Image (cartoon, rainbow, N blue to C red; front, top):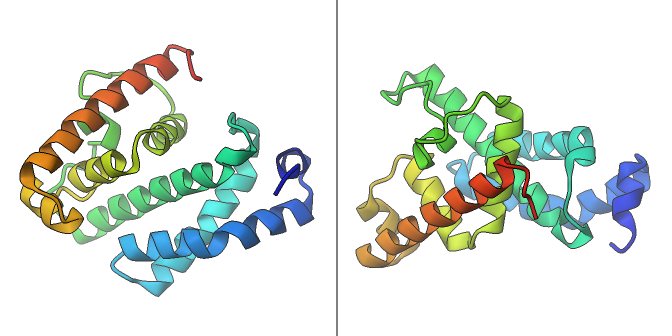
Length: 184
């Protein structure tokens, strides 16, 4: 996909088709597995991922090699939005005003726009090790206990506790750096 990034920024339809062709199946499988194997929801979210990418290509600050990671990050945010919507509709006991970021770094009280914050969180979750990111998402998005995370990830309790601890530290460090404008 060499040279596709500049073409994407120039709204080249062939470049978008190429990006879609190389990533749509992987994004769909990723979403499908995290949305209780619901075909309808997975298709809807996959579509939203690419529509969001089109709308936000100007905000992408990585290099071409990071485009797939960026798309997976958007997918994470869209999955989170789906869980939040599901929580509201089904009236779960999870407080509606809590965000993933608020749970992960409670001390970060900012006035930033939620879309920007979601993209910031998304980028950070993409940049920390996948196992740490997954553990944080299970803990703070799905509300799973450490025991349940260990079962889901097929790891020991100590291993999951370590992943969560290291993940929170990495998240806090990157969040502080990027929020202060020191993004890589």
